[in-house]
Image 1 (cartoon, rainbow, N blue to C red):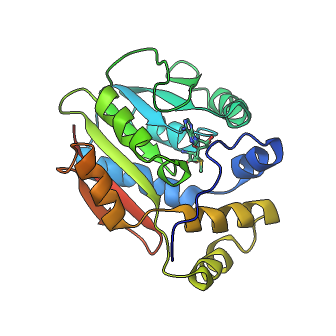
Image 2: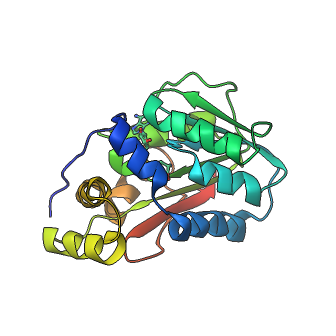
Length: 218
Ligand SMILES: C[S@@+](CC[C@H](N)C(=O)[O-])C[C@H]1O[C@@H](n2cnc3c(N)ncnc32)[C@H](O)[C@@H]1O
């Protein structure tokens, strides 16, 4: 099945509200566990690219108490939910959210001690936007962990995944999940992107029936 792109920014209020209210405990817990398993406890300032409503940002900050985290996203609607979640989590002192469009977003600092990203890649019309930002902002040796969906073989497989994993979610979220699966990249495509970006040393692994992870050090 050919990739079908979806809109980049999630700036529609209803869409952002549904996404912010959804329960992503399983994949987002998996994300921070994968980071810890690969890199242990890290210290310094981490950058979360495409942080959305900051659920991963907050889970990462809780799991990595010696880190501060800067989350960047281009969608004001998503960041509004993120600001509220950070305040509720009482992490205002360690988590800062920034509105910025990638690549080229203006960030509080040039280089970061870790770079993470979850579910941004499949939104990008030009995937190099993510890898350019990783290259630009990871200090040499910094841990990198990027997780995203993988495109299934067919539309019917994508429909089956929506039924399996999002049956109880509101229709707007089911629709977004379906479109995200159609827009996702395959491991071989990601490997080609990494080679183009000069990041071929990063590892691409399949970690569930619908997720891939890119990890390694800058
Ligand atoms: C599916 S959400 C993922 C949010 C969060 N990382 C998570 O795992 O819950 C993708 C996010 O990427 C943002 N985004 C997409 N393209 C972007 C770009 N070029 N620059 C900045 N943010 C972007 C969207 O606005 C959206 O909030």
